[in-house]
Image 1 (cartoon, helix red, strand yellow):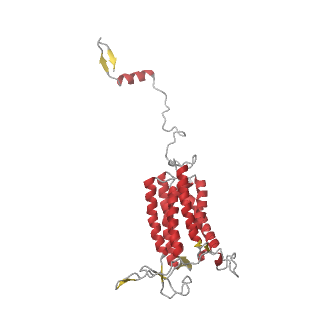
Image 2 (tube, rainbow, N blue to C red):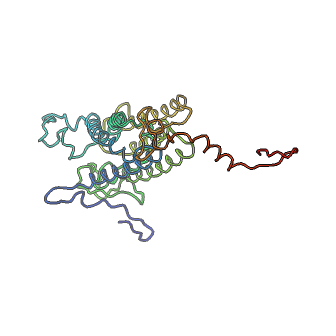
Image 3 (tube, rainbow, N blue to C red):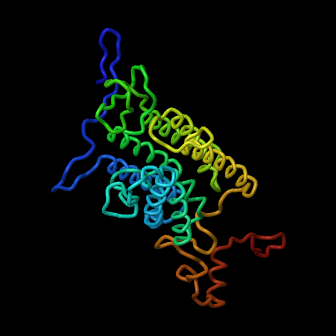
Length: 339
C-alpha cells in the first residue's frame, strides 16, 4: 500500500483481481480499459474533426473499419514477434478451441505497433469511404490515440504484466509471487519498475504537447501525427529497454525496441517530407469533390431560393421611385438640378 512509516514509503500494490462476472460471463478489466480508450479517442477525434469543418461523427464510419483492423494487426504483430508462445513442440496453434491458439485473443497478447499498422490501413480505407483526407484524420486522431494508449496501460496493471526490472525505489510495483509472469529465482516481495505508470504519465504529457504544438504551429498534412510517432516511439524505447517480459531479441535489442525506433524515424520522415510537399494549409478536411454541406446551407450554384427572379419595375414606377429618392437644388439661372 501507499503509505509512509518512519520515512519509508511503501510500494505500489497490484489489483488482487483482473476480472468480474456478469451472468457467468467473465468481464476483464483489461478489455474495459481498451474500450474506454477507444471511446475517449473517438470523442476527442470527433471534436477536432468537427472544428475543422467535417461532418459530426464521421469518425464513427472510419472507426468501424479502423478498430477491427487495428485489433487484427495487433494480434498478428504479437504472434509474429512471440513465435515461441504459439509454435512450440506439440502445439496446435491453428485450432481455435485449443488454449494457446493464435486465435485465442481473449487470453491476451496484442501489440500496439501492430495496432498502428492495421489501424492505419483501416483508417485509410475509411477515409476513402467518407471522403475525409487521410492526413487530416491522422492529425485529428493523434492526441486521442496517445490518451487511449495511456488508458490501455492500466489493463497491464490489472493483469500484473509487462513490468520492469527489479527496483528498491519507493514506487516499486508489487507482483504476486505466484503470478506466471513473476521471474523465477527472485524472492517473493521483490518490487519492479511500474512501466505501465511510466508510460501513462509519458503519454498524457505527450497528449498535451501534441495539442499545444498543433495549435501553436498550425501543424497539418500529417505533421501533428508525426509528433505523436516521435513522442510515443521515444518513450517506448526507454520503457521497453527496462521491461523483463519474454520477447524476441535481434541484434541485442527487443523487437518492440526496434519497432519504437522505426516509429521515431517514420515520424521524422513524415514531418519533413510533408512540410516540403505541403508548405501551405489544408483547404478542407475533405478531398476535392467530396465536401460535406450541412442541412440548411445554401449553395448558390444549385439553388435559386434566395435569388430575385421577379420582372423589373415599369418605367413610370422607376421614375417615381427615383424622383422621390433624390434631392433638388437651384442653379445660377434658377433651374432645378439633381444633386
